[in-house]
Image (cartoon, rainbow, N blue to C red):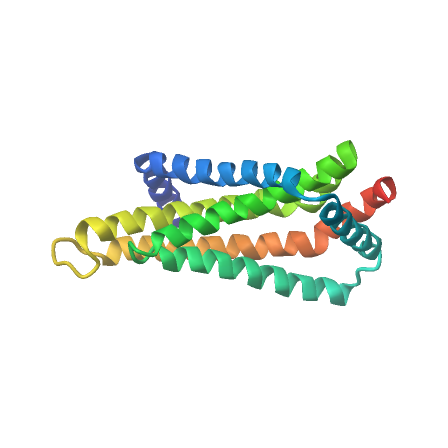
Length: 212
């Protein structure tokens, strides 16, 4: 019963704020596009240096052990939790909202740059590597980041309209809903970290022989 009610509330929230979700998704997409375009601005030396790092990384993939996977899990989850946490905290105040939007754009830029560089340097093989290295965890992580970004935008608009400490509106229910966004996103980030630490390396090992 509680899960069904939660699902209904989330669905209603999305319907009522579809414009915000569209804006957040558009901002992330623009970041992806700019990231892909930025690859063209790299010099030949910079591309060669990045390609050397890529080759070293792909050669090391086959040597990933259970211990290093645990280390990767910890680093990945902590890094993504910091991003999600900063976006969430930025939404608590109106003046912090631009930081949340910048973080969303930056996340998209990083994804676009990574995929764009791989495709630019090793053509169709780059798509295979990107699908193996970026796609699995991104299927979970990107929706979580977009959800928190939309929640931050909605809560910041609420704070701007009513004021967090105003008596004109109760903030307990909106804040509880906003906090729930963080809990859900943290759980998804953990799941994405597990995928990146234990599933992605398996995919990478399978495609390494085609790219090095």
